[in-house]
Picture 1 (cartoon, rainbow, N blue to C red):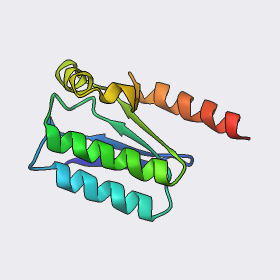
Picture 2: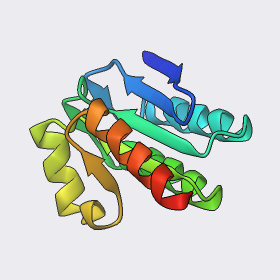
Picture 3: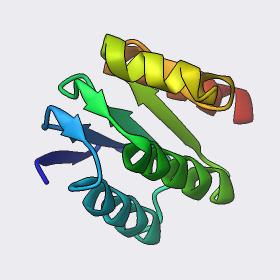
Picture 4: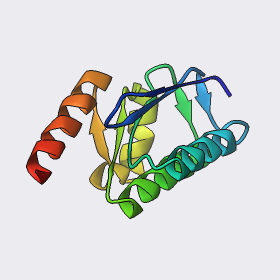
Length: 119
């Protein structure tokens, strides 16, 4: 799967560089989240700005990342949703349980604010 993974100190940014997040590549993404979490990371930002299509397998991998971060008392943020993916997230009512921002920069700002609140 075409992924860019960047450790940015207080979080890890995972960017999906594929137009589709589906049954063919979602398991790879899920495995990546588990490896990131096993290294001790508790804050993950997932950038789907290049992704125009997502199916239920893709949503499951997103939910795995969210659960891993919650279990580690961290934060998972989904960002860069394209219209079709955003509609699927809303139809699935996942927008009520996931933190979603428009851009990676907004996600970073949100993490910084959450970090300041915990101190």
